[in-house]
Amino acid sequence: MIVNMGFISEVFGYVLNFLYGIFNNYGIAIIVFSVLLRIILIPITIKQQKALKKNAKLQKEMKEIQEKYRSNPERLNQETIELYKREKMGPFSGCLSGILQIVIILSVFWLVSKPLTYMKKINPEIIEKYAQELKEDGTNSSYTEIAIINKKAAEDPEVYINMEFLGLDLSKVPTQSLDDYKVYIIPILYVISSIISIKLTTKMSNKNNTKKEKKLLCEANDKDNIKEEKQPDEMEMMQQMNNNMSYMMPIMSVLIAIIAPLGLALYWFISNVLMIIERLIIDKFINQKEEIENE
Image 1 (cartoon, one colour):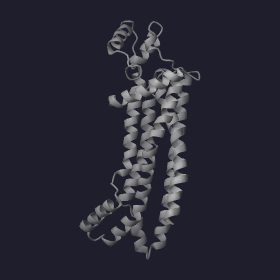
Image 2 (image 1 turned 90 degrees about the horizontal axis):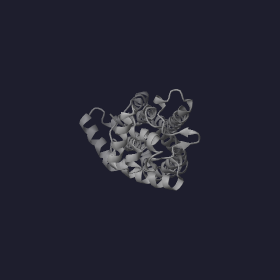
Image 3 (image 1 turned 45 degrees about the vertical axis):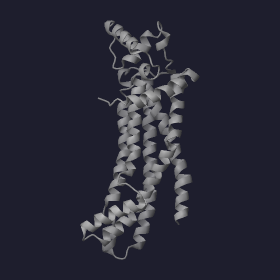
Image 4 (image 1 turned 180 degrees about the vertical axis):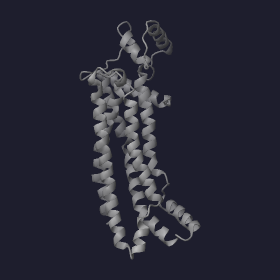
């Protein structure tokens, strides 16, 4: 059972319907919707990138605290809490982006699964009437509203949505259209973009960690100290948790995309491409600027 994010899906539906009214094409409307949503999320993304970078910087101070108070666990915990307070950082500040992604994923899923409800705002009684007629005709579908669009649009223009996009029918569900290879084009592109995104994130993380480790090794005074610094600490565990989240989100998205109408995979693919561009820009113009200022 996928959690229904009704209110957010309603808001997204108004925006998507407005864009559809302009372009009269579901695919183009989804692409523009994706661009607008990424633009709105830029401040949050920048804040999140800064928070993750700040977490990485705090590791050095955490290691010093661990070395100084390793024989006093109570004082160690106290100093760790003070460090978080002083730097105005929460222990799970890096998880905000992942939580936000989950909320958006679920909201867009319901938006594309029930476009008559959330996008077209069709009267529920009319939807129920058509659903009953389809059931009596022997039409069974996991996505009733998509079936209504395909079967009833000819007799009722109100439920019509132009879902043809570059030769693809965005109303089709990959797992229900096994004989149509074209339905896998967008999900495959999404998987490729996810792999690129993960590799990019890993590369950026390794780059920062390599610089940090070199600095720590230069400051080490003896072998015991070096061994101690190599031990994983709370900050590193948080970083690992964030890295795991970056892998879990694409996997979760793919599993949902192949059982959902193709419009969802299109949204995620476009969002992924935009996110990759966004990360490159942030890394170049924001992270590098901070590195110069801290030198």
